[in-house]
Amino acid sequence: MPRPASALRGHILESALQLFATGGYKGTSLHDIAQVVGCSKASLLYHFAGKDAILTELLTPAGEGLAALDARLSGLDGDRAAEAAVTGFVDLAMRFRRELKILFQDVPAMTSHPALGAIPAITDRLLAALAGGSTEPGDLVAAYMVVGAVFVTSASDVQVTDEDLRTELIRGALRTLAREPR
Image 1 (tube, one colour):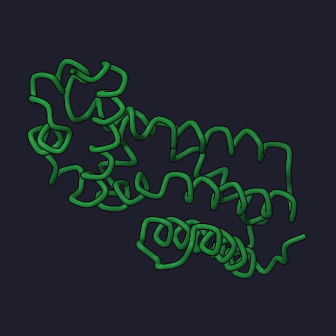
Image 2 (cartoon, rainbow, N blue to C red; image 1 turned 180 degrees about the horizontal axis):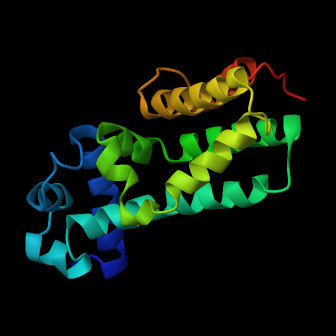
Image 3 (tube, helix red, strand yellow; image 1 turned 60 degrees about the vertical axis):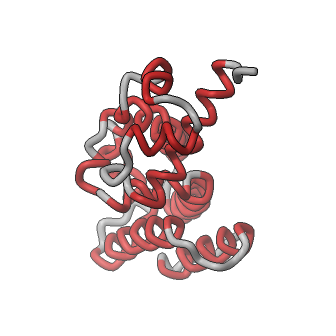
């Protein structure tokens, strides 16, 4: 009995996400995805125009999550902005760990992907929030360190529970920013 179209589409996305995260976007072919899904390449192309369309659908929620964080941070400043930025960014990193791993494997090509078009501007605002609005060199460097560390750590296969990882990412980020959680 054939699977419903929505179930097949979801299976394609989940399989592609796993393959992209382990073998890289460039290292994964449509044929690879179709094999894992157990469908023909033609069936896969019925649901998605190509590999880039699959990637767009996978990355769009992460971009939307970052935009939502950006909106939550507007109007905050100082310690409140930094703490909200840390917590929100860590939560996004935890939620989209595999997507971050895909981005991390090919940063320049991925950050210019249409699904993530607003990323550079949002990242600038996230950095400003992490720095608490400060333009002091130490605060700016600490903000960049937090973004990089959360990005790399959440995309890695750290052998701790998700709850411990989230807790330690927030604790470490706040410590790096020289701020204590409230």
